[in-house]
Image (cartoon, rainbow, N blue to C red; front, side, top):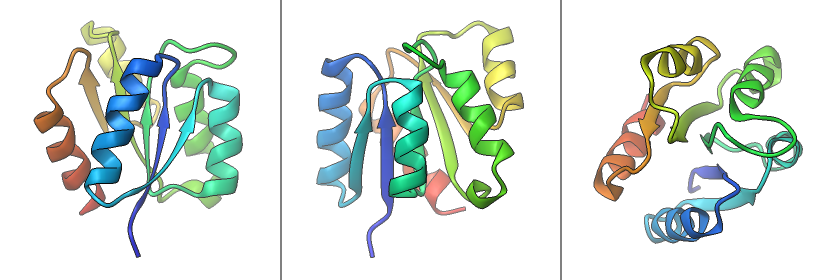
Length: 122
């Protein structure tokens, strides 16, 4: 059975390209365009991995990550933050709130795919 990935980003051009890459690699993909929708999709879709933007409407990515980590039923879900927020304090905050990895936009697709494979193999 293929791994399931939830892409959470409000920038459609980024979502389209990441969705294409993930489907091409054989993953099942769902999309959420804001933090509120992300939490609903986590509950319904039960992804193995969440690719999570920080700056989003309704609930930001830091809060989404925190809520995923607070729910014991979701403890095995991996989180990679994909964001333009690249200052050291933001990276530290993202990792402290439960992200397994933190990738700063713009990123290379090769780097993203390598990190996805690495995180899902843990």
